[in-house]
Image 1: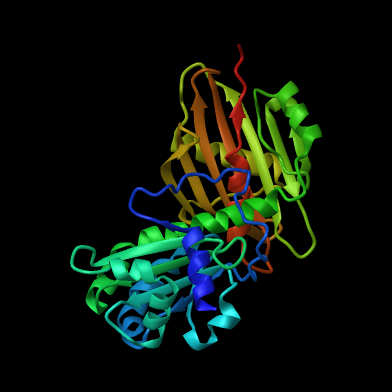
Image 2: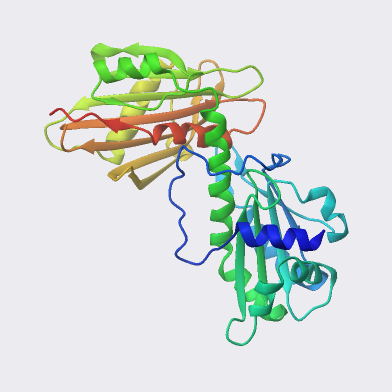
Length: 352
């Protein structure tokens, strides 16, 4: 069985170094559909490490891979769970797996990894004291498996700690691709996209399940809603304003978001202490971003949001793209990521 996995790995493995591609994923998937679908649970990273590696490494690994994102509370994208290698047959088809291997050790996890990828393990030594091997769809579709190998425990942990951001980015990119597949699973709202192209100076790839919530063409505003029972309500809106000179700023964006909330969302508002303001890049535009919590003091409701303000020099037009989630029952982070995926399809239409 392990020899079969080794051959499979040789066909699928990709070495990831500092220059690996972490850019936006393409709509077309390179997933191997001949393999079974991974067994979900994509918020969990199943981790395999021998006792010493886990004892010395778990705090740093958990701190980095369980990093927090502020929505209405501090939510995490992943949880790290250590499992016994003796049960690998139960978990090897899950979405995210992480293996730590001390090549000098004959403990169970390290021994397993050396048998799975003997050629990579044989490369580890004084000239290459540690490395990382990441494989896509190794045992199942939509799966990411990462092996970290060090010539001894010290090199293994040193390399792991130095590359935790890269490890997180690999898992995060895979999760964004999974969310994108779900967002566009039912196709596009072609009718609304055609309307945008005809009436607006922009358009975006709007998924079919998003419908118009509020439309005010006279004042350059449109909002879309995706509402599915037992899932978060997702709102995506675009506001644009002719502007001869660029006056977009953090203050402009904050005030516009307040105006939009008051006018179109029944008095939704922001409290400055609940909002993070930052400079950002949005599709190559120099942008400003607000994110955090919105609330409605009249209806005693609230949720999370993120919005971007930027200026299109060609069109002489300022834009605000706003994403908002309402879901008192549970987590909102993945819904917010899905909205950002759609927002990133925004395209300004060349007046010429």
